[in-house]
Length: 128
Image 1 (cartoon, rainbow, N blue to C red):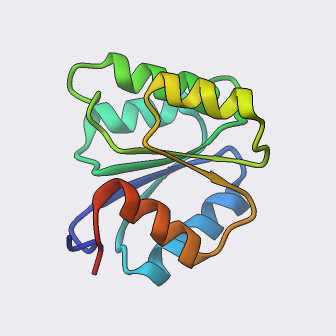
Image 2 (spheres, helix red, strand yellow):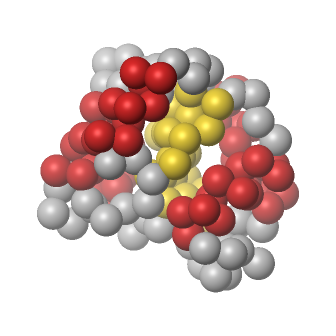
């Protein structure tokens, strides 16, 4: 799969974390990267754009990453969207809740470009 054509939405309420993920995605070869500061903004962008992947933080206000995931899975046009959750906690109940809500993969902070690439490839298949 060519990553240069795939549009990615990075969702995190911390601008610094969005920048870190954007930089890692750029290192992997992604060029079309959009950002959203919270779940509500992300949902609006997803409904208005043609994204191929969502990478969302878990802990956000007012809409958490889990709530965003549930909204995406409930939307007929978005429900097939590949969705990777990022979290600082690897609590089993969080992983189970995300899996039950339909998450495609899960990344625990901190992570590097190699880890991010492997997680994305597990969802999308091999990337250039």
